[in-house]
Structure formats: structure tokens, C-alpha cells
Length: 157
Image (cartoon, rainbow, N blue to C red):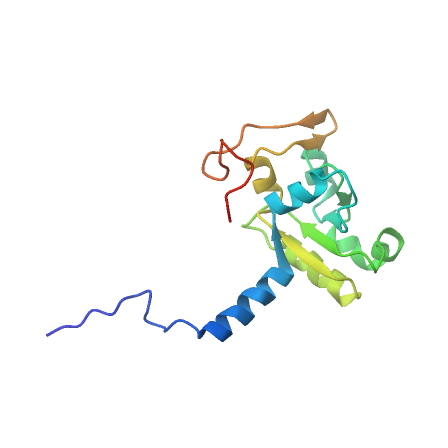
């Protein structure tokens, strides 16, 4: 008799305590596009600085309104003049297929900044239908129904 191993449970799930510690740590390191958009749209101080870590050409093709342009390679020389160490930083790059935001976050953490990475990056900012800035002004594309709910601003999570 052949026994089939469930591929999901081939490695047993972590204990509840281990899972809680992991997800607590994950939430301390990451945020998402909709949470950043909500914080920026609140009208007050979002209590963080949003840093676009992409190249000048990428920045010019579009960036999140209010973001600070600080390419990863320039962080060691420019962070101290542009960022307040008392204010948390949220980094973003192109999207989930790019580790640029993680590299920027690592560079900033190494300099003593508290930092989170915005999951989804600029790609998901645009895909979720949020406005972005270009040299031509503000633009917005229709939300991708696979990434955004049309009848509400929040997914309910």
C-alpha cells in the first residue's frame, strides 16, 4: 500500500508560539501598499518617511506622491542629510520581483535607522489604483481587479 504525503504538511506547521513570534517579527519589518496609502492620505503626519530606492530614470517614470528619492547606492552618503534618525523609514522599489527595497532597508538599518519595507513596491501601488507622480503631473490607472477590491478601499484584513 502506497501512502501519499500531503505536500502542505510534509513539514509540520510551527507551534502557535513560534508562528506568533515569526508573524510579529514580520509585521515589524514589512508594511503594505494599502496601509502606506491610508497613512499618507490621512492628512496628518504619517510618522514615517517613504523612500523610493530606485534609479533616477525609474523615479521619473513614476513615483509615490510624497516619497523621497534616495537610490540605494546613495544611501551611505546622503541618508544623514535627508533623514531624521528619530523618524521611521519605509522603503520601496519596483515590485515583488525586485529586492531593491530590502537592500535599501538593510543599508538604512546598518546606519541606525528604524525601517520597514513596503511589500509590492511601486508596481502594486499603481496596480491598486493609487495616484502617482511623473514629470507630466499626477496620473492614476484603473485598479487591477486581482489586487484591489472595487467596492471598498480595504480588503478586510
